[in-house]
Length: 420
Ligand SMILES: Cc1cc2nc3c(=O)[nH]c(=O)nc-3n(C[C@H](O)[C@H](O)[C@H](O)COP(=O)(O)OP(=O)(O)OC[C@H]3O[C@@H](n4cnc5c(N)ncnc54)[C@H](O)[C@@H]3O)c2cc1C
Image 1 (cartoon, rainbow, N blue to C red):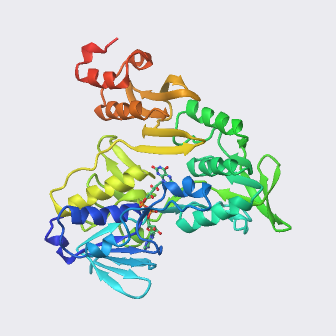
Image 2 (cartoon, protein in one colour):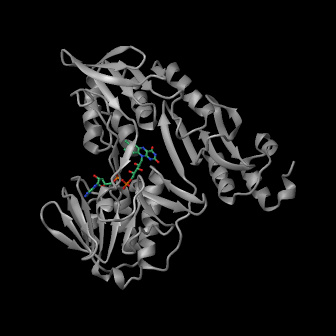
Image 3 (cartoon, rainbow, N blue to C red):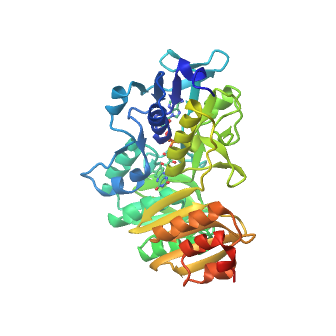
């Protein structure tokens, strides 16, 4: 898309992290046309990771993280239309229809509508004691509820569920986590790390029930009772449901743009309509480094893909090509993941989880494809470089803890120096 074509202005749907970063990058790249951000939440663009971490711990301190200070938008001539949802895209007329009846004309449209928590498809999941976590309001309400709750049931041992469990244990709640799979975090980390998180939560007093699903929730004198597939009935003051997300791709789909559980984009962030781009949790983009389309639910992707899309609207197209990166904090342990795990990769451990810095390196076809670091951020950075280089690395070399990953990476440019 050339700058002149976007001269009618850029409209950004979604005032989350990706929406805010896209607007910031447009101005940063010298785009002087109109920029409008439409957001159905009432808040200016903000980041979400603190909502399941620091925000839940401290009743007195709100740790909101704005993409830019709220007054930055007006100062940079960016119109913020908050508390209003887009309800249609007229691609022929290049217009967006808003639910207050107004319309916005665009030269280029960026869809940054993010995702929403997946609803639990069981009877009673709308019980008053059940919560999900996505927004500032969700986090505020959960923080207050946790302070009063004696018994918490978390449904889903993904990152959100486990971070909530960690915060709740710190506040002295009795916590039961139900996980349908055989290990926690199974979608995101190799089994060795999943097993460590199972043990970590157990050590902190969480009753983690693997292979157990919630099948119904009913009321008992105002409390929720969660019935499980293994025949238990767990009474709770509070139930937190964290079973994944659903990308908000319906507007795109209704306008005829290709979606596939997320809006399909190419490596430039462009959808099947050349005037329409997508970024962040809602996009399933082609990643040239991985050689496939991926949907990433991560801070890094929300920021950097949005910046790439803005760059591609303003200047010559440059592919967005990054190795995925994600982090989580639980019980004071920092976990970072780079790359994407594969189903049958071999895992090499460096160090022992729970006993100082440790790394799990997953190898597939002689290449490093995924690394998970526990309190080892520097090694993780080197692992990311190795994954991006996509060269063969002997497993024995990865196993040899006397060679740092940075050395292995440097050696990949001179393969003879590390080959074993
Ligand atoms: C509780 C929590 C903790 C997290 N922790 C981490 C972490 O530790 N590390 C990490 O890497 N990632 C983390 N993430 C993921 C990260 O926050 C997301 O990947 C990121 O927020 C995605 O940004 P986004 O802009 O694509 O979507 P969002 O931030 O969801 O923003 C999309 C916005 O669009 C709005 N919208 C939707 N439809 C419309 C419409 N029709 N009209 C107008 N507006 C609309 C939505 O309401 C929302 O405000 C966390 C996420 C959550 C929820």
